[in-house]
Length: 225
Image (cartoon, rainbow, N blue to C red; front, side, top):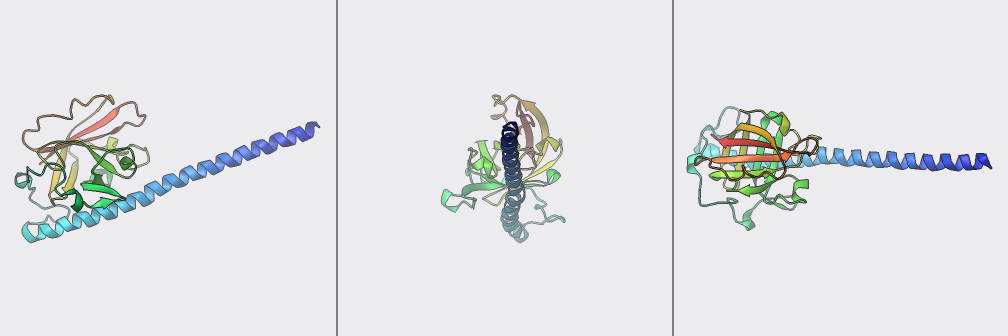
């Protein structure tokens, strides 16, 4: 009788262990899928998107030797009346079903993502998103939000960025601007005091994400050169 109960207990424990292992494998598999496939999809999108801009740049501007951005940074030539997207909604490119306002590239952390029109829950599971502000590459501040999954996706590696690092933002009007990081800090999730700020007549961006334990927000401020 005792051996029968003991055998049943071992069977139950074994089943629980097997379920736990299968659950762990499923979690790791999904994490791998996110990191490998989603990053590759995003990289392919950004490369196609920015290649169109580079092709146009060779028609009228000198391209730098590394072929990453025009040697002139056309801040003064921006269409300041085109506040949000640089294109009508019907003309917007899309990424995985979401409208795209532009792309962001940060060489220091090998980041390449579309900037989605919305920063809602579903969109931020796909890429980074526009949260608030003047509009991509427009005069004033624009806030771009992204998750920190602590696995390299989206803004997980923003903590590795330093003052002076370069960020490239390309928009749907084919403006490709170079931004330099000038401030990095942590604040509370409720703090939005830096969203609306005087940028001195130039475009600025704010990157916002959680820190690694999700207790605060990691904020990166960058200014177009």
